[in-house]
Image (cartoon, rainbow, N blue to C red; front, side):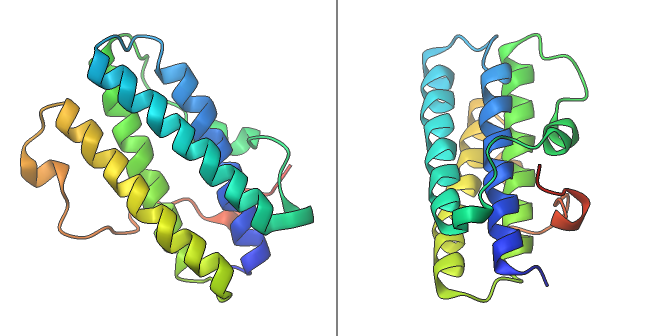
Length: 159
């Protein structure tokens, strides 16, 4: 079980890392639908990070932790829109898995409420990217969100 203060600060740092990685992955994206999705979703992640920072109070992190950025960074070069969309879909899936994993250990109503409202958004992001990639529906919409591929806050200390 992750204490709420630790979990919320970790998730805030995770959202900040996602914002940074979105900016890097967006470079080769050019189709109007993909540009719109990336722009709107990056704004969602900024808002999520801000909401988590408010909840974290003095425990909020000032920037994306380098260790999280390294853990989530693409393993292959992103040279095309398809590469970028595939990376962002995987990123959103890992973010959702991590949020679900942390959510299971939260105990305060404000933290649980916030994560219960944010988690479905991340799942929707992954679904949109799967659609933009023209993946089969069975791959785009999982039966249930799991915690496979989650990041453990114990492995990533705040800066």
